[in-house]
Amino acid sequence: MLEDLTQKLESAFKKLRGYGKLTEANIADSLKEIRRALLEADVNYKVAKDFVAAVQEKAVGEEVMRSVTPGQLVVKIVHDEMVRLLGNSVMQVKTAGIPPTILMLSGLQGSGKTTFAGKLASYLKKSGRKPMLVAADVYRPAAIEQLKVLGRSIDVPVYDEGIGDPVKIAFNAVGAARQKFCDTIVLDTAGRLHIDQAMMDELVNVKNRVRPHEILFVADGMTGQDAVNTATEFANRLDFDGVVLTKMDGDARGGAALSIRAVTGKPIKFLSIGEKLDEIEQFHPDRIASRILGMGDVVTLVEKAQDTFDQEKAKKLEDKLKKAEFDLEDFRDQLQQIKKMGSLESLLKMIPGAGRQLGNVQPDERGLVRVEAIINSMTREERHNPRILNGNRRKRIAAGSGTRVQDVNQLMNQFQQMRKMMKQMKGKSFKGFGGMPMGLA
Image (tube, rainbow, N blue to C red; front, top):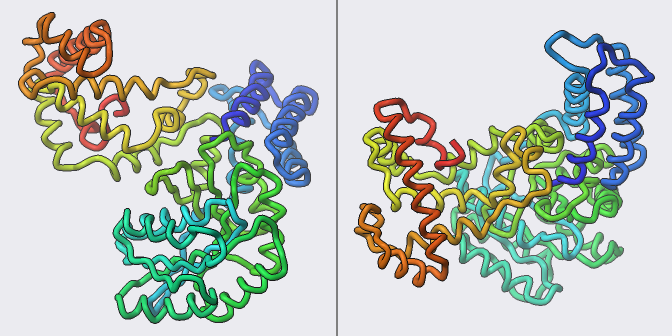
């Protein structure tokens, strides 16, 4: 997410190393690069200008402490300003005093609104709520069916009346939610390819009829400044409560994330970061600012691990580690937990400094698949006791997994080294492994 902007900001900070004091002269070039990086990321021109001016005002004349270089100090100032720009605090989704809470989604067609409706319902369900999806997009072909498929995949009820009046559908859904004891309604409304009077009138009519507790504007994060312009139009007509940025796992330049709150005055509440229904994040301004500046995001990484990792399995694994009884079946379980947490690239970006170390090198996602295929091609006995893997067995495993014998040998060498390290640590505390998969602990 926003890797291009991160790299350009890193290059700007490098120029500040070695100075004992920040002056207008030695900071000017770096501020020009920061401004250029923001504009190339499609950040609104006025937002970029105000941002750089605020950084300059705070940076010029600041004495550099012995333990802090000018580059580090400017990173801190830029980070603080970026957090302020993104909203300072986390904004929670509202909850009605008397259920159901009505959450209305709005936005243009193609922004990922229907998919996000499924993600939001899944997120709410994991949070202990009982959501219902409502199919009020009666214009886009297959929109209703898409919502039904999403609902079935997460075991959440979907209310639909087929092709009809969206205002009536939304109103009737409130009664249906009460009958099913659903405490939250996620209302998927229609979008268009561009803003038009008919669409806006319909959305206003839905709003006036059902009085949603929260209206979320869903914006395509890859459209940059266009998303900001569209959000401004929606804010003027619909007065929504918060913003959702979708497709943030793509080659997004980041302009929408850094501009949309400053321009509209509306907070960003969620990020959609992938295609899977669990790839949704609550928007934390401080964590996103840290990621953009290449400082990682350990808190989110740990939260992902805690949400994904089975605590009962974690306890058993910790016991095995203490006794140095870790086998290939345990190793495979760990790989599966890592895959559930997201792509390797996204996870590594959350580790401070990993982005700089990786540079443009892409982690080998297929490597995990290859290792898992090799382990799956083994018998249960072989996984528990790798010492019995002779030449013939290794040939059979390679053929069964579609890999080479060299790949099997490489995996076994790495595994044996890991076992040896664990024997050396035998009896020591393995706390930390319990809540996080191997390799990320």
